[in-house]
Length: 189
Image (cartoon, rainbow, N blue to C red):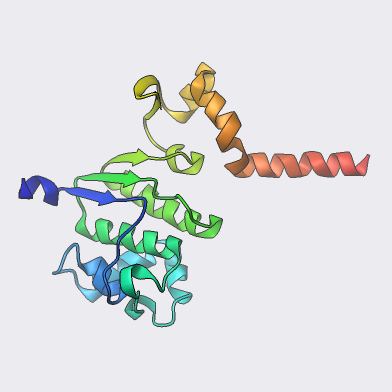
C-alpha cells in the first residue's frame, strides 16, 4: 500500500499547506529534493513570475494553512509539491477552481507539464483544464454518457457541446476575442 501511494500524486481542490516556507511545502513530498531542483521546478511555471510577487520568493512564509498566500498561489505550491514527487499517476481535483485568470494560466502550464510526463486524471469543470486531455469522459448523474477528445466531442454535438455552450464558451479566449470583434462591428455601424 505504501509503494502504491508513493506512485500516486493528488492535488485537491482545496490545497493544504503546512506552516513554513514555500520551499518547505514543496520539499515535503520529497525530503531529499535539492534547493536547485525546487528552484528549477518553481521557475518552470510561468517562468517563475509568480515568485516575484512574494516577498522572499521560495523562502516566503506561507502562514498557518497557507493563509498568507492567495488561493491560486496555494494551488501552485500544492501542484509543485506533487510535481517534485514525480508520481506515476496524478489526480487533480478541480485544480483551477476559485482562482484568477492569471494564476489559472500558470496552473495550466503546470498541468500541461504533468500531462506530458505521466498518466493523469483531471476532475474539472473548466474548459481550459480539460481541453488538452487525450480523453474526456462526460458524466451525467453518475453515468458515462460520452467520451473522446475535445474535438471529437464537439463533432458529436451531444451533452459536452451543451455544457461547452452553457458554461465553457465564455472561458474561451477565442470566444472572448470573437465577441469583442462582433461588438466593435456593431458599434461601428
